[in-house]
Structure formats: structure tokens, C-alpha cells
Image (cartoon, rainbow, N blue to C red; front, side):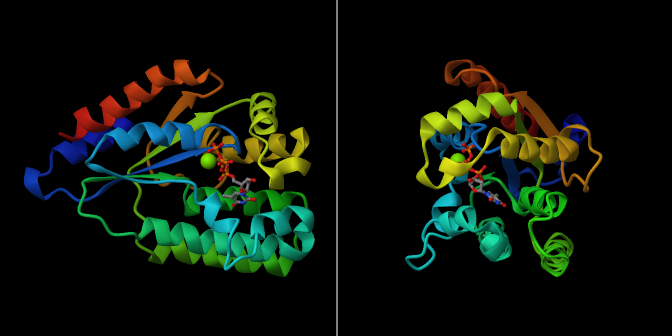
Length: 229
Ligand code: TTP
Ligand code: MG
């Protein structure tokens, strides 16, 4: 419950010595995470970490995202293992600022592993190893998260956005695939019937237009600040 969490934060005995407050922005491919996150850049007390996808497109000159979409059976496991590493690097990036806002997380990378499991894209041993890595990360690594913002969309809407955005690697991504990725996110953050949820979840209707989303963003920003200070 978001309210309870904020109550705990503001009950901190030393107001000048609060620990970092981390927010992860989650949602399907094309749900608007980068656009939403961009709005936070106006706040100079926030470290904004976005577009981890850029790291996956250039691994020492290799476009691993492209290889994964072209040959998921060969590259799916390698890709997911690199996603996990880069997400860990973002989680553990140090800052003296009081807030950190991230696009995605180690937690949501699990959604894609889950989907590869459901669709039997990878071998069982590959899934086993990715899941063991994931478990280790959430139990042992310093990836504490205070709030998840779930940009909830319909697969049809994100399909249109993805086509309009036309990221070249995503040429082959079907509506069916976006439905699968949506279902895993929804099972995790909305139905809460999948793996554990690490922080309170704020669900926003992200089918709205960019201008309508500004109001949602303002609500989100205000509640983060007001409830912490
Ligand atoms: P997203 O991480 O969803 O980023 P995005 O920029 O598409 O989202 P938004 O429009 O909301 O800003 O996906 C980036 C690409 O990486 C996408 O093609 C899906 C792929 N991907 C995986 O295949 N596995 C993963 O674990 C993750 C996190 C992404
Ligand atoms: Mg993005």
C-alpha cells in the first residue's frame, strides 16, 4: 500500500538523513516508459536512468537486441543474461541525490524470461540458470525499490505505438507477442498471481495520449514528493 509506505518514510527520525528513494517505471514494450521518465528530468534532486535498451543495441559494437529478435532460440538466453547485468548496474549506480527513477528493473526483466518459458523458446536448463540468477539478484543484491509505477496499456495500443516508432529491431514483433508480454506484466503487477511484487504499485492508465498522461505524471510526481517530505 503506497500510503503506508509513505507514512513509514516520513516517520523517519532524522529528516536530513533519509536513504535513497527508488522508483521503477514498468509496462509493456511501447507503453511510454521513456516519455514518462523524461518528465522527471526537470527535477534536479532526481537521478533519472533511462533507455537501458540503448545498451543492448551496442554491446562492444554488436547489436544484441537485433540478434535476439532474428534468432531468439540462439540468442534469447544470452540477451536475457545481459539485460539482467545491465539492470543490476543501474540499480546499484550510486548517487547523493534523494531520488532515483529508473526505466524498468531486474524485476521486470523476469517477465521476459517468464514469457520465454511459457512459449518454450529456451531450453529448460537456460530458463533454470536465468531464474537462479534472478533469484540471487533479488535476494542478495542491493536493488531495494520503493515504488513501482505500472503504465498499464492494451496490447493493441502499444502495437500501434511500436509501429509508429519503428525501432528497426522490432520490425518482426507481432501483436500476439505484445499480448503475451502484456499478460505476464498484468499477472505480475495487476492480478498479482505471478512472482512477488517488491514495492507498492501505482497503476496508471497509459492508453491515454501524451498530453493526457501529463496529468497522470503530475499526480505521480506530487505523491512521491509530498509524501516523502
Ligand atoms: P522495453 O524495455 O519495454 O523498452 P521500450 O523503450 O520499448 O519501452 P517504452 O516505449 O515504454 O519506453 O523494451 C525494449 C526492447 O527490449 C523491446 O524490444 C523488448 C526487449 N526486451 C526483451 O526482449 N527482454 C527484456 O528482458 C527486456 C527488459 C526488454
Ligand atoms: Mg523506452
